[in-house]
Length: 461
Image 1 (spheres, rainbow, N blue to C red):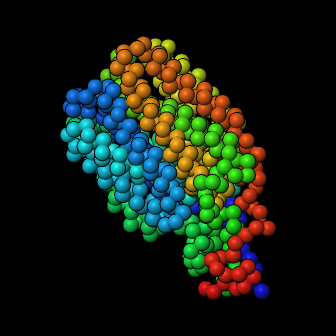
Image 2 (image 1 turned 60 degrees about the vertical axis):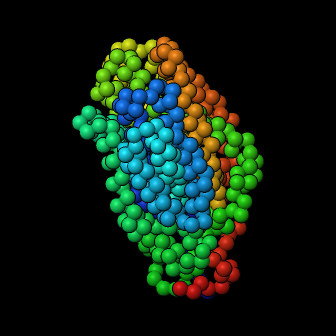
Image 3 (image 1 turned 180 degrees about the horizontal axis):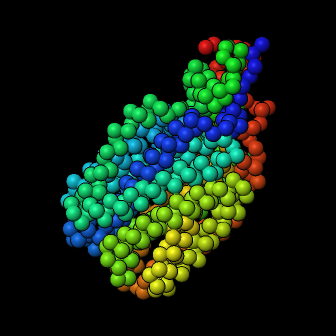
């Protein structure tokens, strides 16, 4: 008689080990690269506008082109990961955003630039829900929010790298140099394929027994060797036949819509600032170097906000933490336009980074916890994809406001209104319907045995 082992339960109860460190390392590195590829346009935008001779409105559309790609990538590639495996999906996304961001540096006109940025956006947006689901699946339950937000802190580190390299490269070699650097991560793909584990739900669905057992033994090294175990994954964790419809089932309809609104407003704030913070600070009288310093402080604040938010989310109700972060973002953005002292402005920009980009990173962690494993990639992917509408609108709207030459504080107030709407949306999410509250992953009554093997028959190894 074989002992049945729930691999998902092993992952939830596991102690953080070298196995988790490898997953964390690659997820962080991938989002560092992802964040760099996204933020690079914001840092280079003043130089691009000058060289290509475009006005602020047209530049806003150029910046939004990658965001259209991100919307498509988040919805399609995020859902596709459940069919082809997360490891392959991640590598496809890395190839897309690396090659086409580098290609954007070769362009000389707004249309070609926008096309390459759209193609890069497919990978930039597609990788986000996949790494969220990957880290969320393997992370020990007691530290899941911290690990997921730590992964997304890599996104902000990418923005920091843009600020640092932008100051050195744009002035010396032109704006194209910061885009060419983005092509180097293509060489990481073989190492990702070699060392990143596959999703246990995907392995179970495909009947890849030996790989699932290897992962189980890495999660629980204390398991004795031999063939007396039957490893399985609960049916809740296996991909749903109708994952999109499942987002609205079991009383989740209103909450799903509110998560979409929260993502819309959060991404509106993030991309308004990512695309226009450098230019807005330049309009305030700061040089390019000083304006990029504000971008640097903004991203440092985002890292601190993400890590701090994850720590709070593991100790308190993550929904309440998220509400507080959205509200802080709205208030701090409203204050930015009225703050004149440089030292105080740096402090405020730090808080804005923590409560806008840091808030959005925490929102990814919350969405990953809200949906059960069977629809997690789909849930996060659709929230991210629908939220991209806010990201697409933001650079265009703020670009139009800049072109109207309104008082600076009105630009920041326009961004801050989104934070207020996001606060209300998160308050309306019914946390009682979340997978975390229902404790769905730990239900043992409904489960699927490994692959096609009947529930109590031995597994062949």
